[in-house]
Image (cartoon, rainbow, N blue to C red):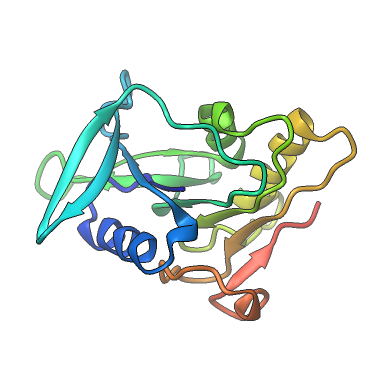
Length: 187
């Protein structure tokens, strides 16, 4: 499953649709409208010919026990310097509003998709989602901490983020740990 958090970026959505089409292990693509913070509507997104079709959904399906999930969006820093993943919008010319989730908030907002027996991987695709701030943890490390606190029972979960800029590519194990590639979160 791929969940796109960047509402305003058609390049990210197109890359997600291409990834799901080219590698069926990703399953369906969903998009959340973070520019409507009160409701945060979800859509299942499909490409029909050259057009993109968004169908409103009430919730997301539960992942299979070994199914991977990929979250994609823009990495942003909030006013406290915490890393978040989400979307940028331009409500007025020259102004930018950021909406997004920290690693823990990301898990809290999507925890219903993770079954108790889940052992799949989580990929968080946004610039610098694996980069740790000087005095804290990266977004991917915070997500890993949240999921292990809830589903843990001593189990460890594979959570990957990006070092440097994101490229919205299907994760390949040979790129893990490579600059700009996927890096596993360690606690």
